[in-house]
Amino acid sequence: MLAVLITLTPGRRNEFIDCQKAKVCIAVLLIMDVTTRWNSTLELLERAYRLREFTCEWLQNPKYSEYRPLFTTQDEWTIVKYVMDVLRPFRYWTLWMSKRHTVTLHHVITVYNGMFDHMDGVMRALAKKKTQWKEDLFFAVKLARQKLSKYYAEVTPTTGVLLISAHILDPFRKLRSFRKWDKGMDINPEDETSYTTQYQEAFLKYVENEYCAKHRRVPVNKLETVPNSNLVPSATASGSYQSSFDPYDLSSDDEEYLTPNNVAETTPGRSDRAARLLTAARLNLNSPPEAPNNWGQINPNLNDYRSDPMEISSTFWIPDITDWWRQ
Image (cartoon, rainbow, N blue to C red; front, top):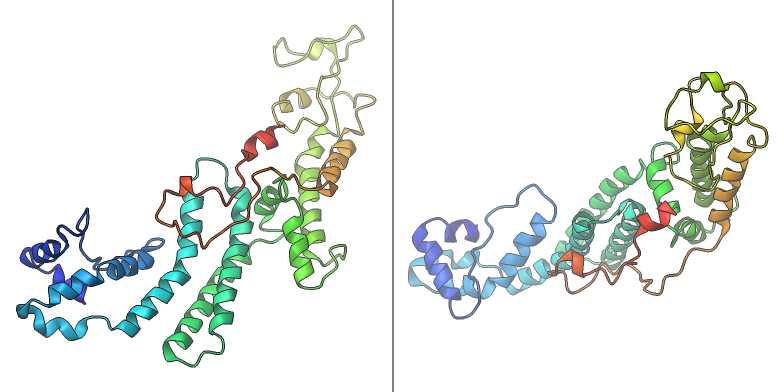
């Protein structure tokens, strides 16, 4: 209400700006309303908290004395500060994900888990509190967690295979997160119902069906049926050819070599390529995650929350994931 009253007329706005002169580098007004976008509530509260001294000074003007009862009390400022502390990690995650210029898909599950852990921590801290505002905040965080759970419920081996695969293909995590989940719930990661087993099998099934299947049949064309094109390797004297496809090259650029118009038979010695590719995928999963020197854990409580998200990357690993994927 005070934000509306202060910005109601040009004269009031100028008086509020005058209260800040010689005290701050850039004078600003209170935010009047919350727009429908990420972090808008936090920005409104932070602006009000930062300008509380100037709001109080503005109310000292005799002609605004009737508005003084509207000023936030010290107890209310305590609540505002607590709510800001609850919301700041979410801004850190949303800004970090949205401001990056590199791939972030493989971080989605990790960020989801971080948000759940944060809300669970807040709820544990407030669970036994009897103060009304703390009970209200507990209820609000509980509802927020239910909302997030609704979104996260879509990440299943059936509907969320893209996120699962990207997470598993992160060489610095692989199955580490899922094993951690199982351990936290006292589940054996080797059990069929464990997250580790379900997600691993979903990933391998996707690799087998969507990638390995393309390499099960490598065609042999008669010389006279091969079109005169730079895309097809030269035929051998016997009228057949064998491509230079590398079974461990995960690019899709060679697809045109594997699906010509006329398929005669499967080239001898190539029928086990798909099995070898799947074996390579299994070996990758079973090998230990990489450990870069600048390995770090997500720190959502980073104090420097006003910094450019591009600059607060020290809490995440830096290596360019796309370079690893290309290899």
